Length: 464
Image (cartoon, rainbow, N blue to C red; front, side):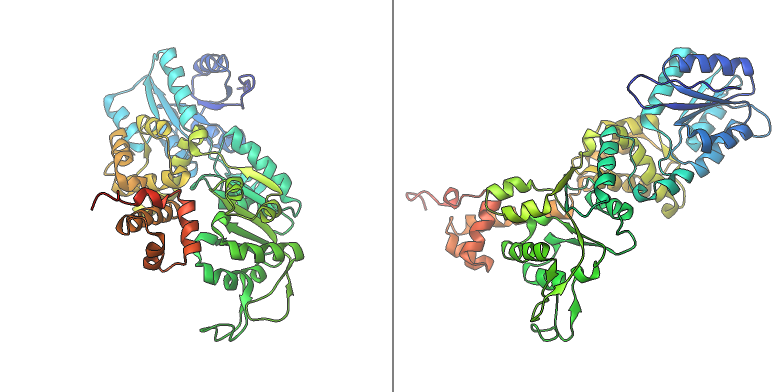
């Protein structure tokens, strides 16, 4: 049967594969779905549908239950094995409660009996298209777009960002990626490297906030033997490890001011000097940096060098928060589930429609990282093949599901530590600095970073 392809003006094509051995029903369904702007392909058997899926790349399959050798459930099992993110709605004139229970237990998205109500069918189709979709980066698409294979999205804003990333990757301009913690800044950096002319050389990532200030120079520039206590042998730094490739400096906003000067010099001259060495070494690296901080604000507060900011920020990519790309939430949840289930014995087959809706409606302050954490928790604790909405709601309410990222936890601890310290010494900065084993200048910078005024912690002179 010929396919009919239409789409809603201004929106990407939404593709539905219809499977039924009744030609008249196929025509009727096709007319109704194309009338609401969907692109439709028809198959008269499960076997034909299997051949059409990789070509048509449907975002939803609507199939009859009772067909020839490959019935609706057999087709569903095949699709679940090869395309685990693809939702399936089953129609049947012979529906029974037992069949409906079995179908939903195995993870079928929807189950309708004939004669079905058109409004109910269209409602299920619309909801399935909203919550499910073609598994991105499969088969031929994976070969064509391997550079972005780790980035699961159908969001227009993310697609625009990836187009920008692909363009900027062809040059050597320094790239700055801004986004909230957990949005996937390193994934974007890796994608840029993979599609760049430097892809055959190393990609090296370093989290600037995770390395103590006194070790950062040695870590990045390397050191010679005997440069300091414990330097029993020479070591190449990460700049030399990444030579010819890409160096990703994550959380650049937390880089100590003293090292910012040395980094600026290295970028300007494309040369580094290992700790303890007398000679500079030429290096050829492309710098990609990232931060969840607003670097412009850090520059205004004097916490980040303006000249270094301009050197790093030749091109900026701003990653949207997960709450700003809700169309990706169900896609990502299903993607994480498909990756995690083998680890837990393939017990879990999918989410109920209500469970996916709950995930989509949640605000996700921890972004994609938090979503992955929640999906893994649900997968590990689920006692049923289909994760119900009650389990999702419980996970979202529990504090452990809202575990912050390392950087957020570090900043929260640091601020709480400073507050308790100031309270103990009644706002005496010199005393607090001594207890913290920091000099006054460094301690004042910490207070400024966390917007803490020592005067607020001084007790009333009249009190005890």
